Length: 255
View (cartoon, rainbow, N blue to C red):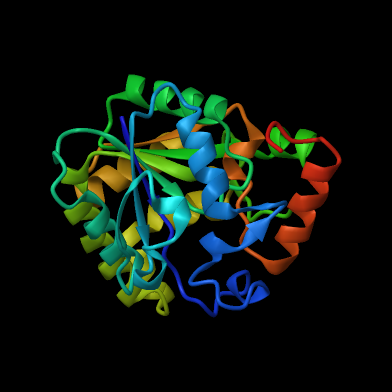
């Protein structure tokens, strides 16, 4: 399977600013290696990945870490980068899209998710991590949690998808983006049933999957990951020091 790594983003990102001259946070060093190098190391160790494409800022395309992978320029928006990432690829063949800041990615984490996601035979499979799984390993790392009927979850750093699903995804992003400042418009898009279920803590994963299919036509599934590392993303400046402490103390599967 092919993996695409989204290593774009602004140079003035909170994490990118920690290293002057870094074209994006993917090129910030964490524990002796850049975030991008850490992600590439995990992908190369995975038995399920046989090709890697990296989408990076134009000024970073000559970086030594990209010498042995296929590289293409990032767009100004994430949707533009995704378009570049899948350009020329078979629209019906699944690929693994990976964020460039999954700092503790390992081959075992990748293989576990890919094998589970392939078995679902969906257009899109989104990685999730249960709060108990994360807290048992890395309680000091903060997350944004969503409480559902099945439990409390956060999102992981990768998704398995078929490129044919992207036009519908892009359309949904545009529609929801235009409505994001109007609760009434969002409620109309999501449906009042979704709003009430969330408010009453009765919103289930299966209901969300059904609503996504109804709104976009995409067969989307959520897959719970067994590994907390699937959701260790470096989103804040403070995350860098926290992850470095974890690595230095030997509490991580990668060094």
